[in-house]
Image 1 (cartoon, helix red, strand yellow):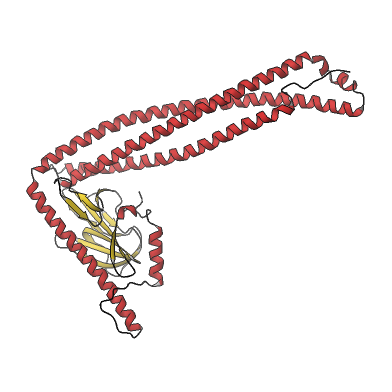
Image 2 (cartoon, helix red, strand yellow):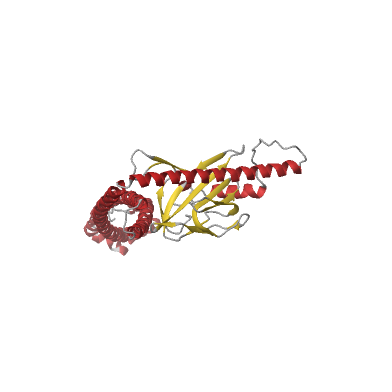
Length: 426
């Protein structure tokens, strides 16, 4: 009777290696999937910042073409400095992400190399065993040496399984080698990407330094015009107050008219002091749609840069002076169309002496206001679609500025100013 024993690389011991290798590859795919998602988000942000910086640079060039330093030029430079700082920060995050991917790829390569070494070692034992028992591989003699048919059948199955296991082991070695080659190529790509990002950071850092120097030069020139700047500030504050008062009056008149109509329809006396605010079913639906789109609204201009944010803002030139901004200012191309950020109805067209015109749209409990307009394309009562032009921004010193505000009417008729920037798509 021929003696035959299982080698360590038999089919009984092969499945754990298959499972372990498969587990490693699945884990790698999951890690790379999450990493790729994070990388795509950073790349999208970097592309958006690149686009924004280009638009801001174009506006700065237009302002400089007037051959004089202006407050808006300083604000544009400040906006570009902040954008470039954010771009550098984003690239730092990208470098960190690439470093993580390089580390993960290195870990995967080491793990695959360990598996490859063990697979080769196991395969070598199988080959050595086959050589030492080569006489036993005489299929007919080994099978016919069986004591009965059942034993002969088992020996035949065993020989088939052993041959299959050697083929599987050889295939695993090939697959692991291919995976290692792919990972090595990935590693090289990641290292090149990191180098490119680091080189880009150096370039952006130099541009940032240039931006800051340009801002300081413009500031020095404007500081000599402190008197005229203070006079301009006084006029702007007066115009802002007039606009706010006109907005309040328009909304309060609208609420009072609505209450009076409802009271008359119900044949009840009106309380002239009541400012309760209720909406029709259509207005409620529009209000709900508006709120659902918070952070997704299109910009009121096709191209532009926010040069003054919502709330208290430090004056760009005069130290110690703050400006209370009821909305945001967006610098844009000369003669740019100003567009509705959401569908609604024109509830008022306001004229501010010396500050152009303003259009107010109704969106349920919300009102969007577009001011500093040279021309207006709509009239009170008009239905307006999202992105429809409502007017043209005024131009001064080579650039235009669109001013947008968002007001909310509470159920008790009170008015709240909200930051438009958080409603716009960034």
